[in-house]
Image (cartoon, rainbow, N blue to C red; front, side, top):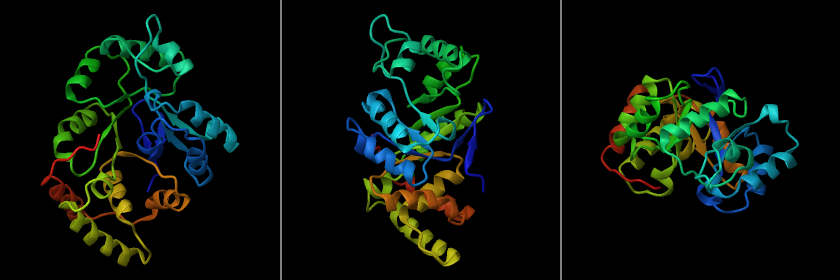
Length: 264
């Protein structure tokens, strides 16, 4: 199975990214990101509002890996008065204060000037996407949203619009059903599927791998994070876990639809 997801602009991204929000939000991410890079991650996801872009860059430098072999996703914050999107991208300033359509036209210029390989959006739902698409000459390549079994039903319109325009849906908080909302209706389905996958594989399969496999088979780019090297390797090993059956895919979706819970 391919380990990359192709974007509508011809570029491609590793299907899994190491995230620097959540536990690393507002904290120095140097050691965590370096650990992730040392253990095989090549896709790092950050944002200006996370307050740790500088430490992410430090980790990349310390890793000794060439820029060409890495994929770094960041997201704009609000601009300071008189600042442009171009300025923000170049200097990683923090905030954005422009109307969506104007922002997107600036982002297109960034792409045209070669300052970013791909441009996309984050936390955009149908109404936001429609506003951008009404003026876009370059379609967003990625839309990153909170996405897991307990919000899947409510996110279906956004996912459908992403697919209609060949926009890759990227998830954060994908492990929320077991990390933040354990004891919910998805738990039994995960354990049932995990048991079957372990029998098929002949090797251990974690609950997290079941959920990440479910997202991946739905065509979703997964953003996840950990400070534990063993857990990092486990996440990357998800690519080697057997596929869920069609019935198992539907089971997680059905159990998730029984409860609506957002983590962020």
